[in-house]
Length: 542
Ligand code: G16
Image (cartoon, rainbow, N blue to C red; front, top):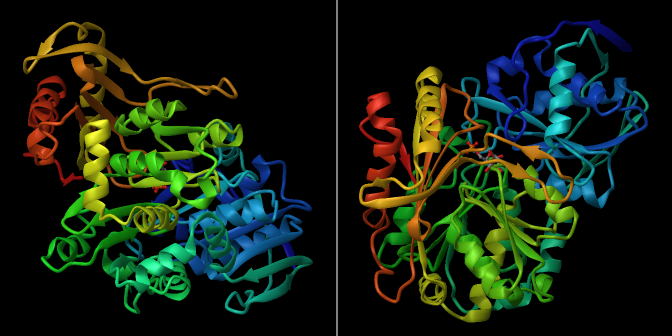
């Protein structure tokens, strides 16, 4: 039975950097999810006759939310929804299914790298027909709709058996339950030299992939162990759990500490990797060497042509503003365009759609290409494996050669988490107010050449995004960048990004924090984060 239920606007349903993220309990409150889903359908001109992709990272409430969304889609007249078995889909796999099936978009249930469980985080986002996160115009329209909503539509019906692959019927709507891995694995097989990677593993190459009890477990098992012949047990924490085993499914040296320890042990594996809650982020580690996301992007760009899918060369490389300029140096050497966009994968979408960029990356452990419209954790891992198989060198050798050729861009991010919002905003507005007076001044013996609040004009559609982070550049290109995180659910998080380039051949092997000590001191002199917040130091350093 179809019902129209009266409702009223709920405060705070404004999607952030990638969708709406809140505490799970907030999402479970009566009407909360329903209001947002109805507002989404309304904002895209209704769901009538349309088709969508639906899936999530398996966190607590994923299964319930999927049933609610299916019933609402049916009640709103949608023609078809493609759902991953068990309501599971990694974000990149969802992006691919939207494109492959030419649907009218998709709904992804995830709070990405944030912890999951009844007391942790949940999230939902809408992706547009190009497979990418909704651009600001769409998220704004959804938000406006949440402010005016008066009713939502719901079908009263039993749950769909999402464990059973095949075609189901729900109130006249078709629900296709699909294997979440198959189409994605086929896409990867078309981009990379699986035979060469298989030969690498057959030759004794040892790898450890930490799926962090999140969605990439089944994907990594099927591809790495299944199709590529990596030793059984290569993929650990492979079973997706509603609370990710109580951990942060965040692939960085802090939250993937056990993997780091294994990789730095004397007889550690040759290659290590981890992925996040919804499978779009990646961390890559060699034996005894950590690869920063900014360096990873640069290495992938410089070596992409070794993989069959990129043999024709790259159209351009794009990075988010806080990501280091290492990739720009590669683009310059290759004679291709490089782009600096605001944080958020959605900004890459228009460059990819317009054929201006092939590879994109962010310091926040995100890398991807024009094969879909999200960042893609396993894609990056497979690209590294393809490069290693072709070059027949270790990660340390590949990085060392890269630095000798392009110089090394020392880079680190310092996070001050869960700050009182007013305190964090005071730090930002304080520095913002002083930006105009900074150029020409000396800080810690270094001269500032420019300081601005980053604004971006999309070169394709001309849209302008302002207020994207405070950027202070020193002579020689060293930088201090500050911005507020757009993905946290508790208080405010200040991210401080430090960067300094060393041309070499001397000075390429310094410990990162030591190489950046001067930048860190300059940042404190400029922004006074520690002084203003009373914190002794950052909570997370990556
Ligand atoms: C999301 C976006 C990324 C972005 C990141 C920034 O990542 O998809 O493009 O780099 O947020 O996070 P913050 O604003 O906290 O620095 P994800 O993996 O959470 O979807």
